[in-house]
Amino acid sequence: MAEQETSERSVEREIQVPSTREETWQALTDPERLGDWLAEEAELDLRPGGDLVVRTDGETREGFFEEISEPERLVFWWGEPDAELTRVEVELEEIDEGTRVRVVEARPLVSVEAVAIAGESGLGGTAPQMSASMSIVA
Amino acid sequence: MASATMRDAVFDALADPTRRQVLSLIGERGEATASRLARELPVSRQAVQKHLASLTAAGLVASRREGREVLFRLTPAPMSDAVGWMAEVGGQWDTRLAALARHLGSGPRS
Image (cartoon, rainbow over all chains, first blue to last red; front, side, top):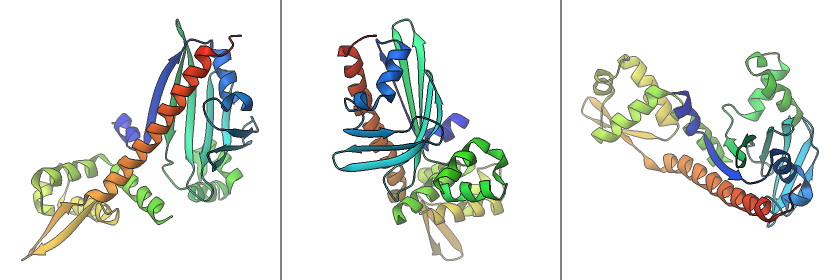
C-alpha cells in the first residue's frame, strides 16, 4: 500500500551504466559533466543545505542539497523560481555490469512553507531531516 | 500557482486508500450516492461523506441533486493534471538518463 501511495506522487526511473560507481558519481556532481546530460549551466554547492542552480534552454531551476553521501546517495530539492520544489533522490548501486542509477522525483506531502513553520515552532519532530533542510529555504 | 495548489489537493486526496476506492467505485457506477458507496465499503456513511467532501474540494468529483438524493460522479480534468505531472517529469528523466548513459558509455573511464 505504501508503494501505491508513493507511486501516485512520485516518478521513479532506473538505468544501468557500464561505469564504476565512483565514475558515475563524478558524472552526477561535476558541473562540467552535467552539461552533457542535465543542464547547460550548473552551479552546485555540494554540501547539505548548499545551493543548486541549473539552467537549460532558458529555463532555470533552483534548490538546495539535502544529503550528499558519496558515492551512493544524493538528495536535492529543486524547482522553477516561485514554483513548488520537488525532492529528487539519486541512488547508485554497484552491480556486476557497472552501476545502477535510480532516480525518484517526488512532490512533498506538505507544502514547503508548512514544514518550515512546523520546524520553527518545534513541531517538526516527525520529519527532522526535512524540517532541518526546509528552514534553509524559508 | 492556482494549478499547483489544485495539484496538491489532488495528490492529498489520492493519498488515502479509502478515497481511492471511493473514486474507483464511482468510476464503475458512473454515478453513486454516499449511502450506496458506504454499503460497498468497510466504513460508515459519515466517513464516506467526509471523503466525498475532500474529493469534491480537490475537484475530483462533482455532485448533483436528484429528488432527495445527491449523486456523485467523476470529473476527469484534475486527475489528468496529476497524471500529466508524472508523465512530464518521467519524460524529463527518461531524456536525462539516456543522455547520462551516453555520456558514461563514451566518456573517459577512470
